[in-house]
Each structure stands twice: as structure tokens, then as C-alpha cells.
Length: 103
Ligand SMILES: [Zn+2]
Image: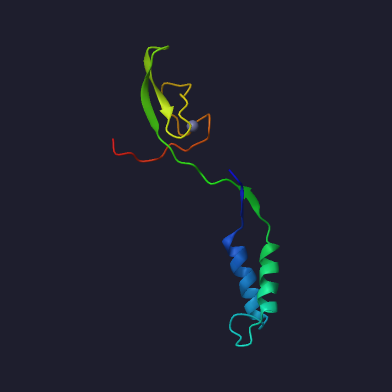
């Protein structure tokens, strides 16, 4: 999965507001592509962090013939949890186990 770059929304708003207060953007009837390009360049300079979207899953209990017990399996990666009890996330793929299921 490709990482996304995330920035703080308040930094984006502040950058655009600074462009507006410079009188060269948005409220100006004579908006030019150069003005828009300048804003895009400034937005690109905002510090970003690498982030991966959170994957949501749930535990599915299945009979394990080797251990002769039902074990929780991850709905995302389908691997068995190393623990019989449910955990908040899958230790194999990192899925957050907060997905609501009908059953
Ligand atoms: Zn998993």
C-alpha cells in the first residue's frame, strides 16, 4: 500500500488566508494562473508526514483442528491470533478490530 502525505488543515487554511491578505488571490477579479501557481507552491511547502490509511477488520472465530479450540482469525489477513482472547488490533497486519458486523 502506498503511503499518503498528510498535512495539518490549519496550515493549509493559514497559507490560503495569507494569499488572500496579500490581495493577489481569490477575492480578486484578475486572478491569474500565476497567483494560483504561487498558492500551490506554498501549499506544497507545508511539512507533511507519511501515513498509511487505517485498515478496519474484525475477529472471526474458527475451529482450529491442531489446537482443538476455536481461535480468532483476522478478517483482513485471515491469520489466527496468537491469543485466544480478542485484541484491539491484528498483530500480523495491524488492522484495527473495530469493524461492526451483523452476526
Ligand atoms: Zn490481520
